[in-house]
Amino acid sequence: MDLSITIGKKTLKTPVCVASGTFGYGSEYESLADFSSIGAIFTKAVTLEPRAGNDIPRMVETPAGLLNSIGLANVGVKKFVSEKISFLRNFDCAIIPNVAGSTEEEYLQVVDHLESCDDIFGYEINISCPNVKKGALAFGTNPAMVESLTSQLRAHTQKPLIIKLTPNVTDITAIAKAAENGGADAVSCINTLIGMVIDIHLKKPVLPMGTGGLSGPAIRPVGVAMTFKVSRAVSIPVIGIGGIMDAGDALQYLLAGAAAIQTGTVNFIDPAVTGKILRGIQQYCKREKITCLKELRTLMRYSA
Image (cartoon, rainbow, N blue to C red; front, side, top):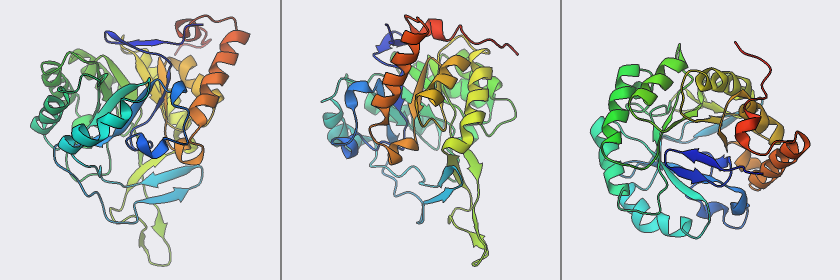
C-alpha cells in the first residue's frame, strides 16, 4: 500500500501531517508523539523578527472548538535556523516552516534565510492568519495579492511552496487558483474561521484582540466542503485541515479530494493521534482494496 504524497518534486512518506501552531517546533512533543507516522511537521510560524504575540488570555474553549489569538508569537527566523532546526533533523519526517510576514518583502526575506537549510522540505506560506493587526489575512483575501506574492516567492526558491488558504472569503476557489497561477505546488485548506466569545459579566470579549481563530471539530464540515471545492478548481494537491479528530475525519477530507491532511487542535488532546489516524487510513484502504491514495480520491460518489 503506497501512502506517499508528491508535492512539487518531493515526496512525503505519509499523508498525515501536523498543523502549524499546534505542534510547536517539534521538541515539545518529543516524548509524546509518534513521529514515525508523521509525513511532515508544519512548524510554528516563522517571521523575520521575533514576535511576542498578543496579550493573554490567548485561547478560550468553545462548544466543539477552540478560539485562539496567539498573534504569531515566535523566535524569529535567525533563531529558528540556529536553534530549532537541529532537533527536527532527528526525525524521518519532512520539515515545513510556516512562513508569515507583514509585507511581501518580509516573506521573501524569511524564505531567503531559510534557503540555507538543506533539510527543509518546503514552505507553507501563511497568508491567512486572522490574529494579527496587519499582513497575513489581508494578503489571503485578495487574489491579485496572492498571485503576486506566490510568484515572487517562486523566484526565490525551487522547494515546494504551499499556500495556506483562509476560509474567511466569499470564494475560496478564486484564491486557490491565484496561488496556482503564481506557481504554488499545493494549497493548505483551511486556516481558522473568525470568531468571538463574550464574557457576559464583564460585557466584553474574552480575548483582548476581540476576535480569534476558531478551530476544532466545529469547523470540520466547513473544511471538508472547501477542500471539495478547491480540489476540483485546481490541479495542484490540496492539504485538508480543520477539525480532524480521528481516521474517519481524515478520510472525509481524502474522499473530498485532499492529497494529505494536517491534525491541529486534536494534538493538544491526544499527542499520539497521528499514529492512530495513519493506522485507521491503512485499515480502511485494506478493507476497500485500495493500493494508493490516488485511488481513494476517485471513490467519491458525488460531483457538484
